Image (tube, rainbow, N blue to C red; front, side):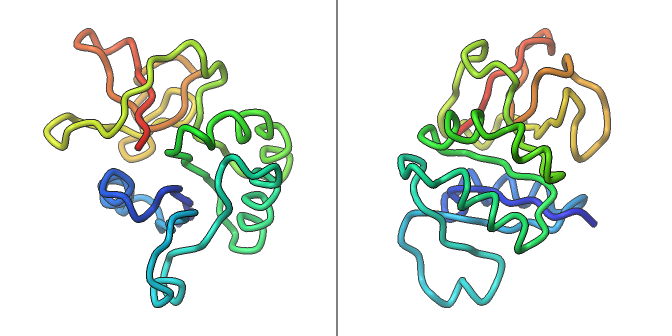
Length: 155
């Protein structure tokens, strides 16, 4: 089973995504926010903030050390640095779950629990395998009523 790293892992939205993905992935969580040290013995890892100039390289190192195949960034400050490091991550076999063009999609912060969230990689649902949108979209999403317009969900 592949392993996925979800950032902002102590937040309810990240936990909700982890529960959704747990049928298909081993879920690990990372956060730059303070959390109890005891969680480090489990599936939690400390990471620097997205504003840190070494953020993308630290996440790459962590992914290589821990064997993560996917990274799902949920923090607004993490999006651009990781987007810029996409090619580097992919060279090491790590799939970044972000759209190819960040600016093309609306951001939705902390979507309500009653809405159906999906996590996509290149347009395919990571849980069901169904193709939902074009291949340029990856990430946590809410689809429009018509089902063809994804919005990127973050914490």
